[in-house]
Structure formats: structure tokens, C-alpha cells
Length: 294
Image (cartoon, rainbow, N blue to C red):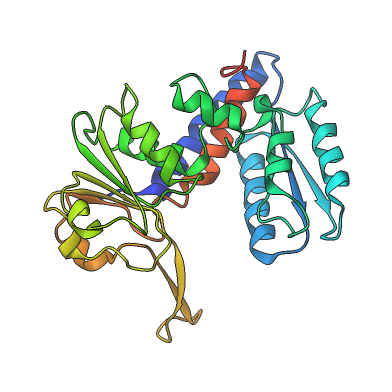
């Protein structure tokens, strides 16, 4: 049986570490970390995600501010709100929950966020600093994966890491992180995507296979090298009449058959997913303590 890389357990450990640090800060008379979130519209999933982030802030002892805006809000009004939070010295981190309504440019909003408060790690400044191996806020999912590799003591130096998927949120930054000088890192990285020829053959050469393609159960056992470490970033809801809810969650990897060949694997759910909020909290703590931008 492979090692099951438990993101739920690891995220709980990280939250406890952050909670303990916040208690130290408060006892020393320091400033309580403060995260602000902007939620535009009434998308059900977005409301759930933001609610979970606010709840997590409360658990670790952070202050949080949730700004709700109507889905018909103008782009200019949203940008003004971002600027207002940028200039508020009490707020350490700012996230704008995606997706945004179609009439609002995600790029404009992202660029408006001060890099010092960009705890989502999406601004060009933080992406560039990450690529240069400078202190930066790393996007939540890549940070979560790196932290899982570290805490499960998975060797990365000199290994061949194949990343499937080139999104700006996961695949591209993941390829940079795995190639950087350090641990986890120092891997030889191949970044693949939907147009890559011989994708299955390339995947078979991976010591570490990170799958973020967004296609349900795309990776099957015949694509995986025996003993590989498999990180599944995908999450999909499919109908399942045997479940009380009427559905179940699966990933980009066909778990049951790939698990028989892998040395370690993340499950779905409970693998990479739970790490996202823990990563966001960690970045906010870094911001509050001025550990990235000073």
C-alpha cells in the first residue's frame, strides 16, 4: 500500500502552529493578523469558500473583514474598494474571491492589490519574486503541495518531476517551485499540458507526478511509473446513487488503480484541497510579521 499523503491532517497541524504563534504575538503585545476578503455577487460555491476562510481566521485568532458587493457593482467601485483596503494599515492580507462577474477584469483587480497584501500570491510582483527564489507569497495550491512534500519527507533533489497542466494558479508556478534551488526543489522538471505529444510516455518517466489538468480520472495506472509519488490537484463532482448526497468527489487521477503502483499518493477529497486555506492563513501571518516585504 502506498503512503497516503493526508492534506486534511497536515492542514490541521499548520492551523495549530499558526494559532500558537498568534497567541505568542498577542501575549507579547503585538498586532493581531487581519485578513480581508471581498465577495462579489451571490455564487453559492464562492460564499462557501469565503465562509470557510472567515471561520478559519476565527479559529487561529486572526481578525477578519468580509466585504460583500452586489454582482452588478461597477469595476471602478470594486477597484476603489481594493484601494481603500490597500491603504488600511490594520489589514495585512486581501483576497478577492474568484470568479468575478464577466464585466469585471480579473487582471485589473489583481494588479490593483498591493503586492504586500497579496496573500493569494497572484500579483505579477509575487509571481516574479517566487520565480527568482526571493521571499514571496506563493499561491495557495502550489504552496500546499510543497508543504505536503516537505512534511512527508519526499525526496525531490535530482528527481524527474512531471507537471500535467500549465495554469497560472497551479501548473506553471508548481514547475518553477520544483526546479528552484532548495527543498522541496532541485528537481528536473517537465511541464506538460493538453497539447503535449506523447503525454502518457512522458508521465511514465516521472518520479514525482503532479496532475492539475482538470479532467476527471485522466491519469490511469499505465501512465504511472512504479514507485512514483502522485499528487492529484483535480476535484470533480460526479453522480453516485449509492451516496446519500447523490454525488461523490473524484480527482484527475484514477485513484484505486494508480494507488497500486504509487509509493505515495494524495486522495480526493482530503489531499491537496484542505491545504489551500492553511496556505492563505500562513501567508497572512507572514504579512502581519513583515516576513516577506519587511
